[in-house]
Length: 375
Image (cartoon, rainbow, N blue to C red; front, side, top):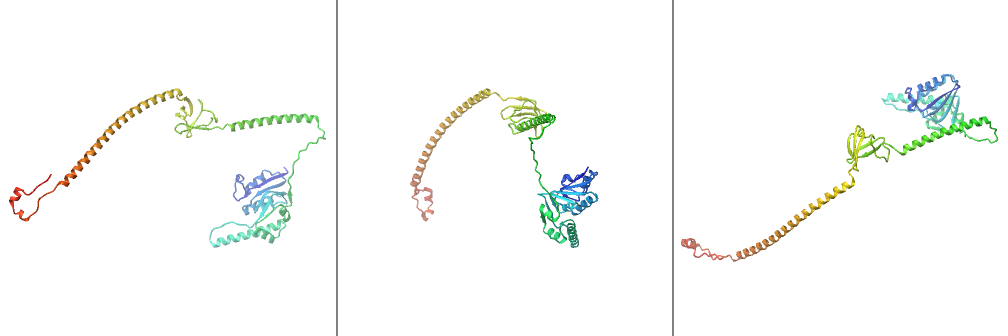
């Protein structure tokens, strides 16, 4: 094996796990495992596409790669940000694609605690900043002051700027693949026969592929897992029933994820009978003629009831008329009586005159000759 290909794809993290790459994480463990699987290689090729991450882990990967004592070529295939640039600069040959980019910036982080702890953390960030600027000065065309200035600005470099500043020494151009038949080229007949067999094999393979695709499309055009509702709104889930098809005996169904059991009356009047999720019987709805006959009988019965009610209503109306006439006569009579009574009240008078002398005349009260009532 001439070359060991090592992939720095993802965030650089100090979290050490063999499955870290499944989570888009690169660490010293994952890099070492890749190197160990290719021990016989005489050269290391780094493929880099990373947003950076933990500074200490980045330098640990750098030191490990350098300790292998093998020529290293770095290929920046996308992003090479932050501490990922440290890993890239472990190489002597630095290549990058035309659309790749590099980013350098000051280290940053977060801390909690008292002021002494925060001051120590700020001091540590300053030391790392100084260390990174010296590192860039030793590996690129930048001096320390230039590196510090560009880091403070959070500077992005395109491919040309990387060439200028020493982060890369080659830009990979896109290679165009061209297939061209040379009609002047001599063809070996034996090779031609082999080509025919190859074409035949490929055509057979293509035909099988087309059949598979058509089968897949047919399956997709007939989606399964049809859900029907009975007359009460209960959902019957038929997992194997194709769209547009009616259930038949033997079909399976579930209700609320449990095998359907018992009778279910459908909106069209049919009754589905299930046992342990299997459709055992379909009772068809009554025939239309029977329904019409039943409706006719019910209609005749309703007509008779209506006629009876109309007769009762006619009798009640007659009785009501008599009551109204009697009431009117009674009102007229009462009005006449009231008028006579009022006239009677007007005609009532008395000739009695009070005299103190009369009080002493006992004969007056005994005989009451002077008191008259007119009627």
